[in-house]
Figure 1 (cartoon, helix red, strand yellow):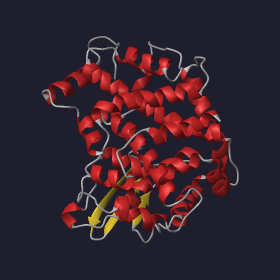
Figure 2 (figure 1 turned 45 degrees about the vertical axis):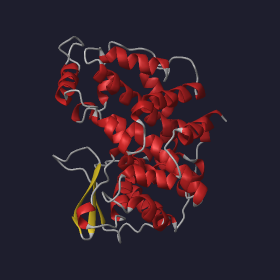
Figure 3 (figure 1 turned 90 degrees about the vertical axis):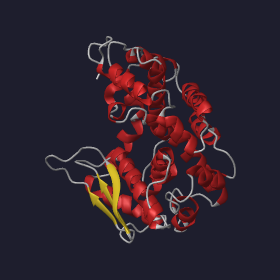
Figure 4 (figure 1 turned 180 degrees about the horizontal axis):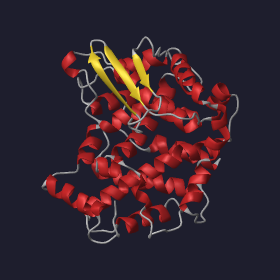
Length: 349
């Protein structure tokens, strides 16, 4: 992706072509953020606040990239042995059933077994619209907490679109990719909470370890989103240097400018600018989850009324209503990063 790191870097050329093709129009990620109720002129400032909160809650010493991954993977190493490959689907179904979402009744189908030629990427899609039939595609050769989290996320997409109740013309994904990615994590984020772990797995890790696992992935998504934003402003910049600055200053990862390890995220090439949807989505879902607990009550270990409560308020509209209206009505006001930052600060307790 980065060649020899010089001016001929394929990634630099890709970004330059993407910027040229917009002909001065705002990046798609900015339009998507606006559609979600996230002000584009505030977004980068909010993302930096997320990275600063991570930095303040963790050790200040620099660590190698691989050691950083090892530390944030502590929760997965502790709990993954409790989740066999066979148990993945059982847990996924049981968790949603406990929240009032019967996946079989919602016509959610799965293709999870490995086979030759199958894409390794996990994704959700749907075909028929009357009724909606969802499909989850993924390839799992093993169980583990990370695969369970991914499966709960993809099933979150299916639960979302299965709850759409509108005219056929509007029966589709909403007009906001950040919102779509956000609500898919509504349930999945709870795998990092000790109460959830004890309830479903019979064991748990300390809260700080669980939160580092939750936010380790999120702060990387935020850093990737900022990498893309900065490269789009200056396509001639060296992505290794931009990435090194972000990960050194905020994630406290030792600089490795000779390595293009930022390039491990496929979306950077497959869909330039898309990482901002994950970053903005993290802000949205933290606010949505906090509001749900405030208005409806906790749901981490099960609540049979959750799905029928959240569906009409967040999921039902498809393209019928602008997402920004739906979110702000649900939250009772504008989007802010306050809920996410407050949740991250629990790492310091």
